[in-house]
Length: 399
Ligand code: FEO
Image (cartoon, rainbow, N blue to C red; front, side, top):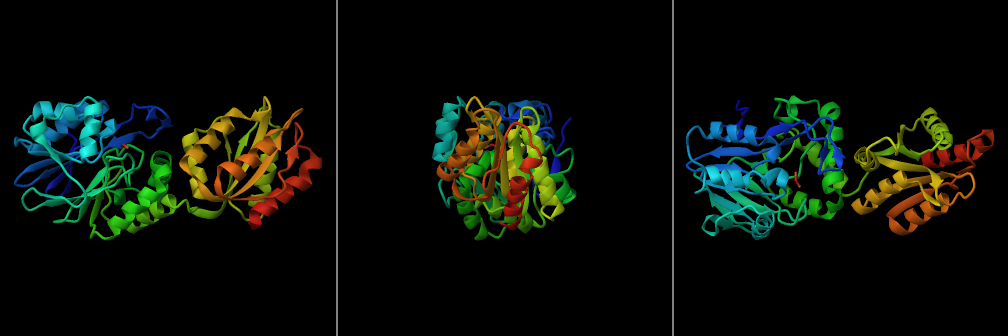
């Protein structure tokens, strides 16, 4: 059954939801699913803007056929080649073999690498500022290198102000029949998924995202149609402001604290809980996450949200606990910075991880303000630790 929604007079949403995929990119848990967005524009020519993942192939083809209503397909715009968006291109071209494909030169190279065959005579390579008219609608193509791959471009319809933004402004989560962001409660329904999507997928490329935001600020945008999550037609500033913060590694909640803890037998957890209680009692919103049972995707999202981070780790084979090490590797890879950090550690017989954590935040990370005296809990936290743990909480609170 086709599941198509009208985006505007001439544009139809032909994407679909994937609720069966457990791990996006085979790494990020998506309990609320994900949508692969695609759009059909009906003008003097017909245009498909991006395709979809194989996972929703049947739904997608049925949607495209319905939206075209018996017309042929003249153009496919490929803004991004990652297979969650371009995998279905091959099937589309088998069904509509005369469709011309509009993409950057690098995108055509990547399509070849993914073994997706586009006949040379059907290729329309475009570069920054090129335009293509489809009738009353005209697209201007704007490159968006590394948001999230190097071949990416976004397409701006100058006739109606629609920005087809590729991965930018995407959000995890199935749409479930809704389409527009104003059909959701942003803070309740979308914000965590949007943050987790940006920070984990595009987070490393803050400078490139800033470049795209700068280009977008020069466009008269009425609507944003991303490749995942809802379409934005109202209150875009709210989302653009979040993107500005995330891509400059500016905390969304600068006064909030997040405690990431690794605990084998509960001693470190108990100490972390003591610190969290002290912070909350004194008015700092502090949350705790067990790195062993919380997906790194969530930990990364929280580290981008809050301005203050406490790392509480047990030592493991003379090293930082492996699950904590995984999380730290991720925030290093993503280039997280501009954070206040407190360190607390544990060890029964060789408590090396305190020094290793300090080394990590001093040498491997940039623009980190470490506060406190790195309290050391010997095996289990006791009353003798109260003073040092309280001092750390107070240092974090006042930082
Ligand atoms: Fe949703 Fe970078 O692909």
